[in-house]
Image 1 (cartoon, rainbow, N blue to C red):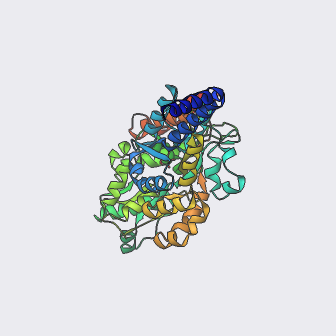
Image 2 (image 1 turned 135 degrees about the vertical axis):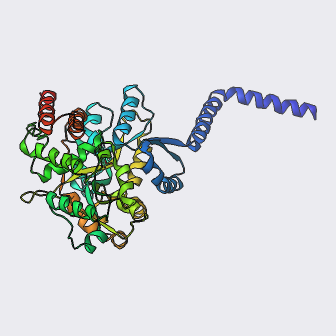
Image 3 (image 1 turned 180 degrees about the vertical axis):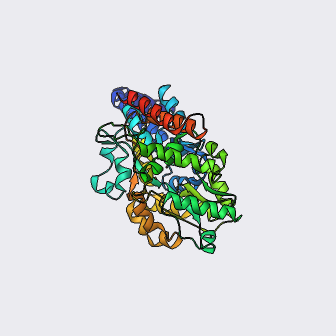
Length: 430
Ligand code: GLC
């Protein structure tokens, strides 16, 4: 028995010795298979930063994405709501080197700067031209830099004029078409004690001021920078008249003097509290105001203009770009694909009232049932005014904001402020 046993052991040992080479190869293969199994069950985290108000609204989308993609954790970092502050945070992350963000949630006006700085990867290879045609043209164009695509649009945006339907109807007014009508209706309703303020808009020194201003400028027939010729129109009579109009709303008490410190959210609250007849803001307000005390008492329309000119909605909007240094481009793309898909946009819009970037959704039965004004919204966003799509946009906007703010807080006359703004902008572009 013991003889047999030791015989078998020595047999086995000599067998192992002979086959040593093959056995070690087998073990190495086994090791790699094991590593692979462990590795593939580990989740990949895809990180991006979004302004706080919207980050909360993304919750359902994030949960749905993670349910459908169990191998990916989608981590959303909340940022302040003002676009400039989010831009600064992303910018410092990229300037410091390895950005912790796999994706960038990009305002349409950051694309040129981020792409020129080489912080984003081109996305042309991930998406077909046919697929891109499903999106609004302005939003796709706004995502390009030197013919490459860097941003897939998620939601479009366009500045609108909100008005109180109840107050206008009861007092025999149609919604205003011109700047003068807006002023007259405001003053009459304020005098009758119907509302504390006539018109509220974003006057703080930040990106929202430039966005609001291009609409007034368009309504007066002026322009900021011609992106083809780089001509600057800020010292034209139309531009000076645009500043004068805004200043007058403050001087005449139609707008509170505090308007020069307001961003979108402050003005939304004044409208929702029933304190103003008119408000300039983005379509996101419609969804939130429908849950406020003025629910059912307001509507929105394109911005007012001079009788001989057209109105213009500032083209805004947000979309997803991919960081140049992400270690997970495939997974990051799966997030972009999911978030910008028709189904995700529909869910998000039904919940929040934002504007889709996919054309089909403006006439989507479920969306139109909830928001009957969406088909008209398509016309508004298709006729929007771009802020100049140039790589130096951030600096150009900064110059404009500084001088507009100086004029609106009455530390400079509109004429002097706009002359200075034009000169500095020309220096920047030369
Ligand atoms: C909105 C727009 C964005 C714009 C910002 C200004 O978020 O979508 O394009 O820059 O408002 O405050």
